[in-house]
Every structure is written in C-alpha cells, then in structure tokens.
Image (cartoon, rainbow, N blue to C red; front, side, top):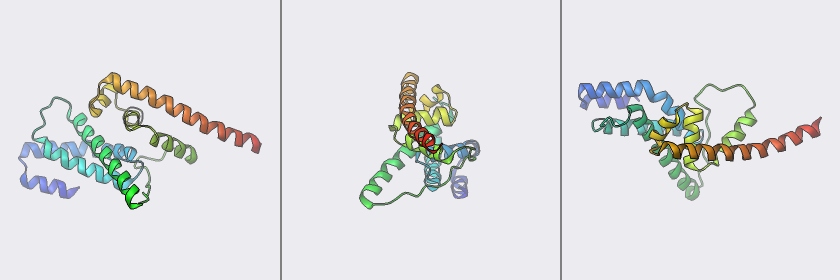
Length: 189
C-alpha cells in the first residue's frame, strides 16, 4: 500500500494526491471487507482486489466528474474487480486444477456456531453474482438500496428485486439445511 501512495506522490498534483489519500484512509478497510465477502473468503485475494481497485481509482481520479459520490464510485470499482477476480479464478481452477485456500474473515469473528456460518457462506456462494452482490452490499456491509444501486450500476428497483430473490433462495436453502440438522438433534435426544 505504501508503494502506491509513494508512487502517487511523485507524479500527482497536490489536490489529487490529497483526494486519493483521503479515499484510501476512509475506504480501504471497508473495501477489503467487501472484497473478502465477494471473492469467497480469501484474504490474500481480497487484498489484491482492493489494491487493484485503488490503482484503478487513482488512475481515474483525475477524470472523476462527481456525478456520483466518490465512495459509490470507488466501491463500484471494487465490485467490478471482485467480479473479474472470481471469473479468472474459475478459469484457473478449471484448467489449472488450483484449489483455493480460504483465509479468515477480516471482520471480528461473531459469536455463534461456526458450522452455521459455513452453511450460510456456502448458500451465499451459490447465489447468482448480482443477487450475492446486492445481498452483501445491503445486508452485510450496510449500504442503503440506493447506494448499492449506484455501486452496482443498476436501478434501485432492480437491486430490490435481486435482494428479494436472494432472500427467497437463502431462506429455502437454509431451511433445508436446518431441517436436516434438527432431525439429527431429535435422533440424538
């Protein structure tokens, strides 16, 4: 990260440099967390996605017109980079037989059942990309539907529809998972 800032200081005008440093300071941690969730829990990949997004943001900052808020613009870059990473990871896994390693969540680990968290993570991973992105942005990262729409480059109604479908699929999938686990509990007692 220091390398990007050092390079940018050498070639940037002062106001552009200050805007970029402010962007990094305010949004880097959340961008890593968002990328981690979108790439499937791989910390190294989340760091790479965030780094690539920061480089793209720096390159595009001079041309930023201000049609959207700068954070919406930046998170849209993060989402696109995460999508690109997942697409290329699938290609590498298919043709190179690479098994991805899963790292820990950069956010504090919530109390609760680790098996349940894994079940939810698998259910999220099976959602179509746009539904997963909408769910992660709104329900896990706390963006409003309007902000998520700006980040995803979609209308608010479309994001709402993706959320509705994602929630319906998650309910169905998790309901099936819980039915199996409650039957096991009933047999044990």
